[in-house]
Length: 295
Length: 145
Image (cartoon, rainbow over all chains, first blue to last red; front, side):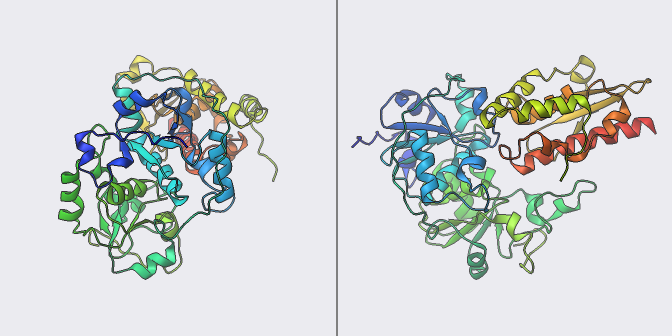
């Protein structure tokens, strides 16, 4: 058994409901060589890791590795076991994720790893952009980690994942649409000569409130403080910590960021990410849609 | 489905990609991103002259110029933190810059699917590359009309 790595005791994190889920760039720099730690970069841009990454970090590609290559779904237990083992990640590894675009994809990867209940997952606050802005070392050298033996764990889609039929049954309960305001109102479909990609219809799920994901991020890509987050999600959007909440975006990546905020930073126990999101809903025959600025 | 005929320069690029395995293909795309030439001063100082390509998931701006003898020159601007988008621009620059306008207009829109990248890069990304080509062609047609 590996001893659990210490948590990051930064004062900002102590305010969050689950401070054990987040570490700073300083913490990562200090613990890079610790046995039992694997740092993984997960980016939207498939080439970014190759241009330079945190020393020792492995690449975790959301598109080619976390998804099933044929069916629109994530890998199954056997696939996840194979993937983690190849990356040198064991069930008792402390897995720290970071990435581009304010950690969208890192939060998405963390959410997928959570479907398999990986025990120790953490997100590096500020992601790749903050690490680079701080002039911390990067390398193009790909680490050769020894193969690990990750057990086959059944994926649990019940707790933190929502499917379309569940969202239909959820109408009337709290839904958060984290896309941009133009996507929410549906007006993006009307841009002349620029066909909206991915969905036939524009608008949002009836009753969904618009809280673009970026509201949760500060200028330097780090998460806002707990008090700031509470002001947004509880004050403005009217959520309550005991609510059963479903979040969605276009394919579930930006909403993973908000899922992380609500579930781990604010500690809401019942938050699910609808990964089908608008690319499913906006293409579904007879799925109810609301246009405009009102929920 | 038979692959559409490509002009020899693009065909050579497609052949280079298809001769490699997955990870090597990404490395080749990275090389194209590194070889994308910087903007000449007349565009670097007037970025508003470039056309945005919103279909790309990262910022990408381009301009196509047609010389009197119909030779096409292409100019791209994409940030270094968007290497995939830069790589696509690099492929288009290496494959198309210096061709004549008719040759560029004859390139099939689906050529992006002949690079063997569809398993490595998300479909939305590849559509961004097709959108770059579409906008290049439109600029060329405008300058010739």
